[in-house]
Length: 172
Ligand code: ADP
Image (cartoon, rainbow, N blue to C red; front, side):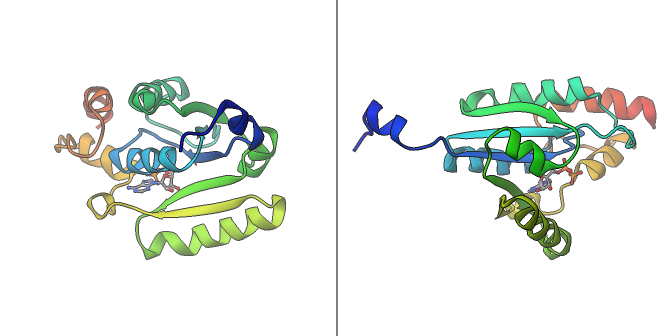
């Protein structure tokens, strides 16, 4: 049964955040973002602003890639933030952080973070097992492969591919 407009206003909007560096966005990130967008009313992809960590792509470039590849979902919004993700959640009325788990090795650290975030601010974390196709995939690995001229066309969206080959090639 379709909800009536009155029902829509009766319940709060369920928002989730997918935080990360996204330098650049990969098909592994997109898998998690698209699945989160099917579970929540609104998904905010929040790009970390990390002054001390050097990135291959600028914040604006990383956001532009994300804007383009998430446009088809309709309920995904791109933002950036500095500081603690729980503060970002509080300020934006977000109850859930969505994280992809690639392997058991991700779990140790992510569990600690999730428990800390729940303890600090009551923000829950939803872990999604990655599609096995992407369980080895990390932005850092993609950049390394591209730097040496390897083929990453199956690992990143089309808009990222061209820029990545140019940028990583020039840096390598
Ligand atoms: P990376 O770890 O690739 O440098 P980020 O810091 O941008 O990337 O990752 C942000 C989040 O995206 C991670 O905490 C993880 O939850 C998720 N993620 C990254 N890569 C994958 C992948 N291949 N499959 C599923 N989730 C992923």
